[in-house]
Amino acid sequence: MKIGIIGNPNVGKSLIFSSLSGVGVEVTNYPGTTVGLQSGTVCCQKNQIELLDLPGIYSLDGLSDEESLVRDVIQHKEIDALLVITDAAHLERNLYLLLQIAEYDIPLVIVLNMVDEAKKQGLIIDTGRLSHLIGSPVIETIATEGKNIDKILPLTISEATPATIPVFYDRHIEAGIRSLNKMFGISKTEALLALQGIERREEITEASDTISTEIENEHRMSVSQIIAANRHHAAKNLASEVCQKTKRMEHSGIDRFLTKTIPGIPILLCVIIGMLLCVFIIGTWMEEQIVLLFDNLLINPLLALHLDPLVSEIAFSVLIALQAGLGIAFPFILTFYLLISYIEDTGYMTRAAFLADRTMHHFGLHGQAIIPMVLGFGCNVPAIMGIRNLTSKRERIIASFLITMVPCSARTVIIAGIVAAFVGIAYAFSIYLIIFFLLILTGFIFSRVIPGQQLGMVLEMPPLRKPSLYQVIIRSWIHIREFLFIAMPLLIVSSIILGIFEYFGILSVIEGVFAPMMESLLGLPDFVLTALLFGILRKEMAFETLVVLAGTADLLTVMTKVQLYIFAIVSTLFVPCISTIAVLGHEIGWRYAFLISGYTILLGLATGAVIHGINLMIP
Image 1 (tube, helix red, strand yellow):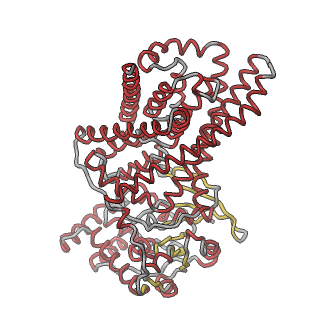
Image 2 (cartoon, rainbow, N blue to C red):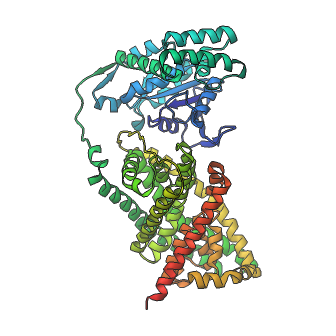
Image 3 (tube, one colour):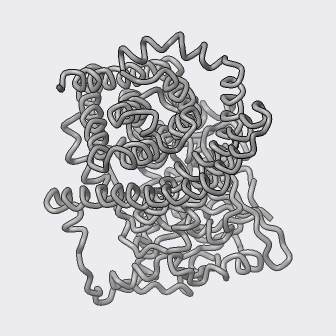
């Protein structure tokens, strides 16, 4: 049995999906699109069920990739049943999508989530009445607390039924539907899409265009506007039938403080600085302990064995790679994702984006681009994929330049593991300030160079919630396992190759060619270039490879503090990782992907050269 999970953004859809499916989740692109879908398999009442987490949408009549995908899945009956997740606190808005789904005649169960938020707003929903009017079962849930989550699948297996509630459209729309049905034998949903100019067959184009033109001339409105108005009216009437307003519960009204410039921005700065401090301090402490264990228990005993030189080099390469990955990178990745998942689960990230938009708009940072930029602190790849929701190519191009400069979690590993650990926490923060300045400068310049209109932001503000420890751990694990199962094997193989190259002297030849440039321009040792190039595979590998090449986790024995600082800022700004470049090529074209890569290379080298020059001027 295949069950799709559908709903508006920010209704707890993905939270319910992860609660039902556990951690065994796969992410794949829907055939013919670039939209990623999460799927998971679960067993319930001796039935094997495949769950499909469909993208969050507001309507089935839109033309975005996400809306087209969901419409295609439902229209072609690629699923056996639907879980329609709704926000009880905003039921009328959610019913608009539900009424569209009802017209596709597919078995469904309505999950009325966030009933606790509705009660806080003084809303009481008669679920029995709602189920009777719609014709499908309704279940109340509080996903953050896990309430009734275990009852969803059994209810879906036994009682999922198609909705029977009709939407009464304007008489001209109804007449147009009947005409198309009589002429071409198409269904009501196909006729509605055809009248709006969406997914219509070639043979009905002329007829549907003629009917639509007559309707629009009669109403002085587009067919899409008339249909939307009819659905909104039906949703409003349905909500008024089942909702009762009581006395609103007292609440703190904390959003009045979080979304105002003062004290919102100081609070945002405190959150960011506090998170980075935790990453630096906790990660550094864990790094010291793990590195010490590796040295005492594995590396020193290996060196004392006096094995064959080639065997010893390969074994040492494996151990130093494990030490670099598990002892240096992993503590910072673990700490970062636990903290960012916790903050995301509270709903505060939306407030942060709202504040950042208002503050940074003057510097060329565009409204809707703020959300993928915030995501960029976790990983640039999904952040770049998020730019497809921006309304103009101009915004997508500018956002791409800026997102590739945002310090992702892998770059945070470099900043924390090198600068915070060996140079000082204050210097680590100074790198963020430099990048922030360059980001603003880049946005300022490109917003004036690239022609087009700069648009604002329409942002939905989900309620603040108490984070679920289980969900924080699950969300963190999804990112951490990528590092463990993708980056670590890559690092070990790369380390072995470097060890073999070192043994046969190949590495010395390569480094010797570029040594003059590295030393004169940046003041760095020749082997640093190899570390920078490996950073193209994954950003944290620049740091890990540096440790491998240095042959020790104590980098201060082979480089000065100034050299470590320059290496960190160059590798942070240097060309994006190969995954980010690939996504850039797909989203905005390879011309801009290479242009952005070249820009970041020049920016990184120029920044490093300036710092090196300033250091030479200081007596």
